[in-house]
Length: 354
Image (cartoon, rainbow, N blue to C red):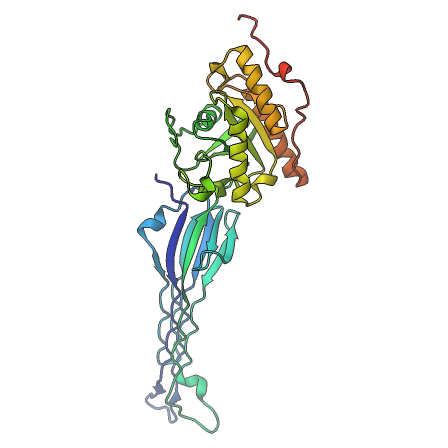
């Protein structure tokens, strides 16, 4: 399934049915009179957040949604049927914007949440409605009211507990694949990941959702590379895991590059709790590892976790750190980073068999 996180669609609610002009004429009934029924109400246009979707790809193939018109009124005081509603089913986390793509209409953050985007027009009154003591035989009726029409934007921001950020080839997709059942594309070239991937990680019996997004490079907020638009998918996370590859010649500069892009993007990302990890440590010897870990600690202001998704080294510890922040944020609506005040030397312990 292809990934699409933004779509432009046209919606129109149904017109109301017209009222009927009719007069009662039956054998053996001395006095007739008006008996035109009212028109039915036009259908509404709704949007609903549903489970099982994580892309807006369906709206690439259908961009127009129209509810049906109410049925016209009929004689014998018969009211027309209401028009059928139309419901746009979208993933949880979808935001609906006006045509200017800036004015937010609704943010659908919970499964089953519904919102009426367009109200159907009311049906017109039949001539029975206009009967009075001074007008016993009105010969007119109201037309139905027109429905509403507008163009809207759908923008998806995935719902995840933790987000992975870093430069291209920082090991984000490999990390996701090693701790979840997700199978993102992994290759040794920049921008292997072109769209977000979600996976469910489990540690000590607790599950949480991880979001992997395309890598950021210097100038991404100005459109360099593939830009920074995908950062919207980690806006809702409780914590960010910032991966810096041990392959980078200057890990401190790599960290600051991504941090600058997060700050330039906005959206509150720079204020989120961040756990820093030096990834792909299996490619370094102990001396170089300690040197780069110290450099990253100086740049980030915290002791980084030392991890390798290939050898599974340090993975349990960093998952527990993510879990702790998520659990605390869920319980107290506050976020706090785990204590990383231990010396860097204690994070790297040689295996006994080496």
